[in-house]
Image (cartoon, rainbow, N blue to C red; front, side, top):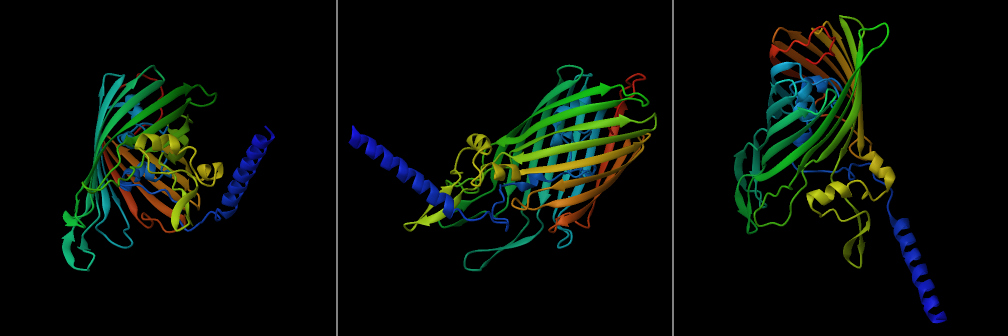
Length: 402
């Protein structure tokens, strides 16, 4: 019995010692971008509309509009218009090239007062690129591109709560089709889904025309990985994302409205582990194996950071915004976006403005980087909107939605 106890003690001491050695050899958390979580089809994370672009990329609980598909499709059930169409273009890396950008077309239709359907198309063009093989021989000039087609159904569960489900087809054509190393390179495909909820509660506030508090939650791009080779077992995660946040809108009087919104975002994709060489082989010394299925990766993303809970918090981006409307005709906006220096270090202010007249609407936004360069810096983004068949809600004062 004493021998067994001694062996248990020795085993525990060895386990504790090995754990300490690994913990001590874990290198300091780098700030060079090597801890950034990367995915395929990152164009799915680009804000397509100038309204949210002028508000620090906030949109989980802001008032519904044509581009709610991207931010929270459950908001469509609360749209005041019968039909809405949005057309936008986001120039990308305009300071370097002029042929890269994201074009988008969004539209929705209300079905009575409780339901709505919506569709969208996003097309990301990467301009013209010359491809070469591993010997430097030219394979010709190609125009790689990616696109996503979305459809959603949104419904009110009560006067204050709505939900939505969305489906998405994703196509990524990055590499011209050719054979290399006995592997056929081809475009990648994926299908994904979104689940979203939206809560909106009107308030009576003394001395004002009332207000609204809202909360939104959206889990987007829940779907299969993408592979660019039919003969390869390697596949890449798509940017599954959790977005949530509140908003507050105050109708100061019959002409002036001001709103505030706040968003938290987290990629639901596994964090890369930390490797080290042991006996000539690379082994994981911290974190978890990220070669898992897309569904397993969603759950693992909450607890797999090699540097612990601190790193999990660093993977959350924060954004806040304010928006002022005068008589539902003219608006000005501002926002701020923050990302940890360990996870990309994107930090920027945004400014924006909006105009509405009859069935037409126009939004503008401008981005001012605080840390690092940004693909949208020194670029004016715009979105054109069309709204038809306004549904009259009686004399009740509503928040600005368009």
